[in-house]
Image (cartoon, rainbow, N blue to C red; front, side):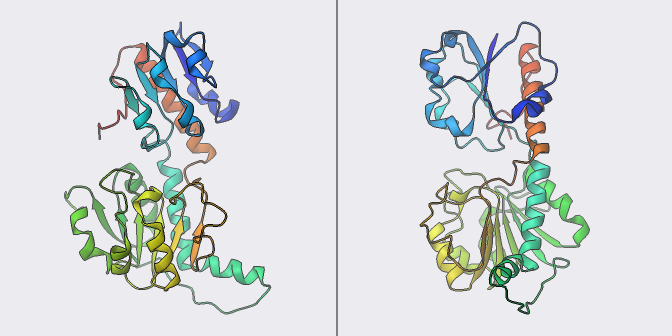
Amino acid sequence: MIVWLCEEGGPGARAALGELPPGLVVEPFPDDPRVAPDRDRVEFVVPAWEARDRLHLDALAALCVVQVRSAGVDWIADHVPPGVILCSARGARDAAMAEWVVWALLAGVKQAGTAAAAQARRRWEPMVMGDLRGARILLLGHGSIGRAVEGHLAPFGVELVRVARRARDGVHAVDELDGLLGNADAVVNLLPATPATRGLLDARRLWLMRCGALLVNGGRGATVDTDALVGALRAGRVRAVLDVVEPEPLPAEHTLWSAPNVTVTPHVAGDTAGAERAAWALVGEQLRRYAAGEPLRNVAGDY
């Protein structure tokens, strides 16, 4: 069996694959799969996000599994041929994402952006710090990352309001969102990009948020109307810490860069060394499962 792996992560991360099944031939993902000599014998691929526009997976006649190392599959789903199993790395980056969310919340309530701006101007200026303890945090998206965030926030004594696609015990349905936004000190958006979530946080919902509330986006940029967010930031309605935006990468001339009360990180919240090792370890487990004929984990749609 031939497996194509992307070159991301480096030797240390790749070592996390563990022992692979005998007879498995690992090759680097080629620049152009259409002309690769082994393309008709490749059954399992691990592609890279950066190469999403030149994957040409339909050229691989024997392809059975596409395993990504990201929690989301929106970037590749349209490139996967019918009948091929697509698996995410759900769970591998949960801890890293949860740590980033805690950092973003603390950065927001402790005025990290204001302090950085004052330092850049060499100005000793008073500022008002807020409290995370006792804050009401709306978790928009309560999958594995949302549950990890909840665990990481437990020591801070926050009040959590959980929102997911469907209601269940202790979790509100997204249909109830309008009535919940105005009571939250911070909204943590962890939603994936789907037709139902695109632009979910539009101008109307951003203005339903409590004045001065913090929006933390670690899900997908497309779930927020960027122009509406810029308007809400300029009006002083909301503050924001964003790891994901729309579009990505954010052009240098984009107005979001110069909007007030916003901090942007370049879609790196889940890209820690530990998360990389966990993602590669999952790839190794999936390869062993596939070789043994066992069910694969994290099959897209199997949530």
